[in-house]
Amino acid sequence: MADLATRTLPLRGFHGSSATVRLTPAPPASRLSLRARPEAVEALSTALGLSLPTRPKTSATNAARHALWLGPDEWLVIDALDTDLAGMAAAAGVLHSATDISHRNTAILVDGPGAAAAINVGCPQDLSLKAFPVGGCSRTVFGKAEIVLLRTGETAFRVECWRSFAPYVSGLLAAGAVDASH
Image 1 (cartoon, helix red, strand yellow):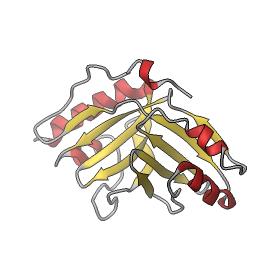
Image 2 (cartoon, rainbow, N blue to C red):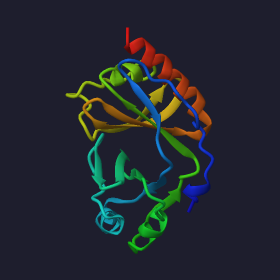
Image 3 (tube, rainbow, N blue to C red):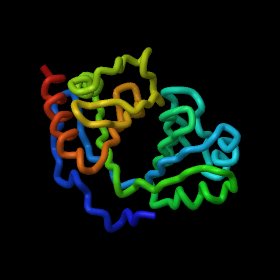
Image 4 (cartoon, rainbow, N blue to C red):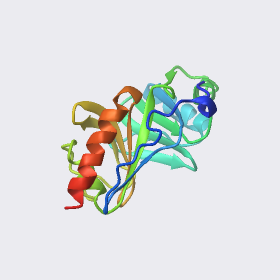
């Protein structure tokens, strides 16, 4: 399990907001890449304290913990606390693969009336509320980087990316925020 308290933040000091978009580096979080067969989902859901979603582009939230559906047998679990998610999954006692990726990822919170437009600068996905409702999520591209996108509110998103792509993703989001204000 990664120690969140001593982690170097890749976006420390990042600023990129505009009149219609707020960009904020997300606080450190525990993250788990989880793979499991359908027969293990119920036990893993119980162990993790939230129902793993089983439909495309959906997520589940319980307090500070989110589970994002990435594929028929794949989830990204994010917890805002320094939680041993892999240990919790192991306690389920069912066959699965759980990899702590807390050290690999970071996130940028994008909020405001221009948030979808700022993201669409690098992401071709339809981010209208009808096509991508609150709680919607997907693994997609943003410019030349892979991201995981979660809609947390009508005008709010969480953009998960690998730490090594954080300067690129944050810079393109900052440009998109400026464009969304015009």
